[in-house]
Image (cartoon, rainbow, N blue to C red; front, side, top):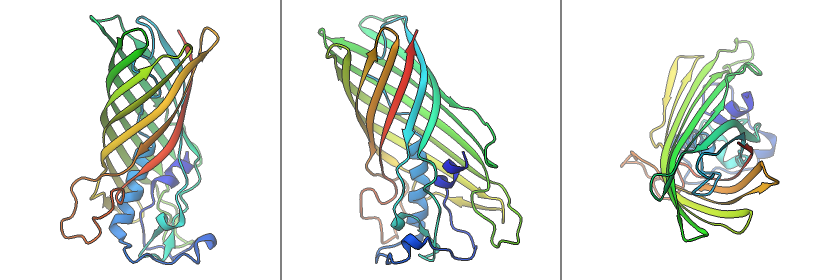
Length: 290
């Protein structure tokens, strides 16, 4: 999972400046800001690992559940989002194409008109390419039917991520590799709607998501702070369905278009809704219903 870590960060060091040849002709924007660039990349990784719905407001009939695999795409960052060190270096961020997690979900007995449900998603800390990554996600929600086809619901979700490995590379080729630590967490609430069309149920959600990050650079013992953690809108639009009696699928478009918290009131670059973090991606789930 070093690839996901490389996506993760992304924070500048004093290493000799290196620029991807594909980015060599990109000119520095007039509004480039080093802090904004760092915080955007930190938020980008956390947004890529949030636990979005992936299901309709009522994911299963009461007393039923599913186990399966969730896969979230990590869109590659453009050259303009990869420059650091005041536009003197690019980070190699576009290695991991997706974030996988196994998950389990269950719908509990009805409480009046409401169907409560919960899910948990997990990626174990398997060492790979010199790094270890742990993802733990969960949700709790309530869904209700309005008439025969229409569904309404709400959910709370949270994710914790820990990454250990050589993220910030050594200052020079002669220096040994030293592991770094990246931590991210996210939580949020969503309102959901869905409508049953036979075996397929389209759904949509809109809500608020908050992320926080922490990065410790082992080479020099520096902690880089995220001064503008994402706090803003998150939306999804998708559909779920089944193949045969037991196999379930879902696909969704997920977007966190912009937002920030704790802004620096003296900064000149606060304009731009998604300047401190934004993401648009696709996510799929495949599962077996129990």
